[in-house]
Image (cartoon, rainbow, N blue to C red; front, side, top):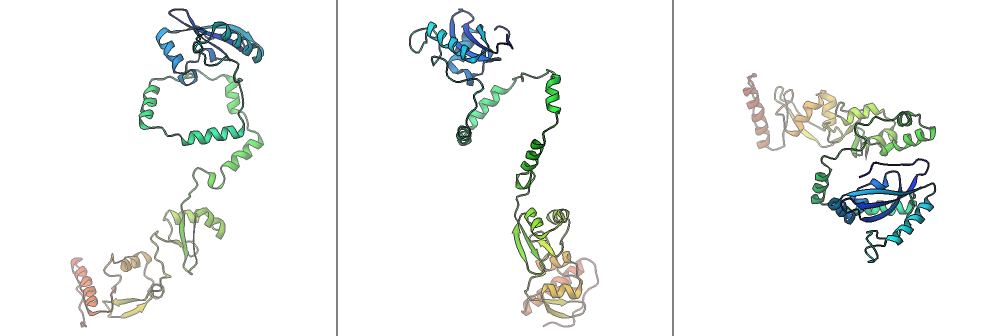
Length: 321
């Protein structure tokens, strides 16, 4: 294949492709830059690619042009002169008479939207993915090992316009930010107020500090200004159920809600949680049991057994019901 030959003063050209072994022409085209030497199967087609694999390729630039319209006219003339194979008029594998499309053509917004939606609906099978992966292995990037020119570096380092900076800022605000937490949390206040929203909506609505709510979400804090997250381990003291408490050391029996018990005895929330959930047998001598004699005896027996296993002093019961 011939080396790339580009004329900056006349960017458009007409080229011909020949079979390298037989020197027979099989394609005529128009382009600019490296189009004549491009060998991508998707852009050329399978038929063109099969010929090149079998016979090799030789590129001939017919003429260079300043204006694209002149190159287009030459392309149409050469295709008509050599003849197309599908029309049984010559050896060319071109599917058209030339002249279609324009280099640098910009599609309309509606057309781009249609193309985008069409591509989104396309589903690639695993077999196709494996083929694409196998084909890409060993392929070397066209710019690998090539240093950037000073002009390219200058463009990359160049200062952005104020409008560009503003657009970048707007594109990263709110839920558009890649690190935005879309999780819906159940926030509840000890006074009974509750809401379900994202952490950012909560911060904005109730004028909270972002760092405090972050600690609440990450379980580094139990409450913030009376607010807690349901399901994050905080004991909901707004529970209005009445529980039957009994102290095995003093034989004191109390019937309180969680809030009333917490205010009176100041037992730590983490320990109280174990007592309520049944993970702990007793807390500072306190147990919770039901109203029946069987449940009372069962609760007392559990506490006594647990005390003995830990080697702590045995509890003496002053009586049973």
